[in-house]
Length: 289
Image (cartoon, rainbow, N blue to C red):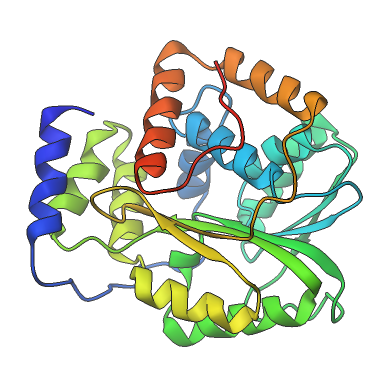
């Protein structure tokens, strides 16, 4: 971790006042420019490729063969497809409210044709297409901050409770709310990407829920979950079920191949995020590279 990043983190940690949350200007992405910028960031060589692999490996540890997995706010499906490739023995349903995002996701799924991914348009606060106790696992990666307010977050978690089977499992990851606006601005600008992505990223950080808000809402699912934040500051927060098993040889081999396909820079970023979470008490189920 660079000295400038560490200094920013320490200033944020030592700040005494938590900022108020600012919901995103557009809660559902309808803009083609926004959709394209987000989709490009999650492509195999996109700036977020390392994070998507990190999430895919962690999600794999809470899955079992034959699971039906619901991915809330799947977006362009980059993350969903990464998990589905690592776990061909599970069935996945990606849900998103944006028709523009779903069209992008449909194109991505058609190109890969994984055979274990379906897509559905819908609102995560009202999971009407899903029957009670019909899903084994619910995932949501970097999308809860798109919700308008705490009431919507709580409604989502009550719906998650309804659709999950007894002993269902969760993997939820999102930004945590930082204390200083300047820290949020720093992290948004640090990626040095397009103005569109940088602006959307900054708005996402401003819209993040606090760790306490996330933990309290997820408690409404009635599932035993643990909460883990990145060390020093809650830049990212994971709320997840306990691992179900050690990663099997076939899944690990697929994960190692995905890691080897990352650029050297992305491999470094993968190790950095893994180390950042490990320092906060949350380790990977296996080491890659």
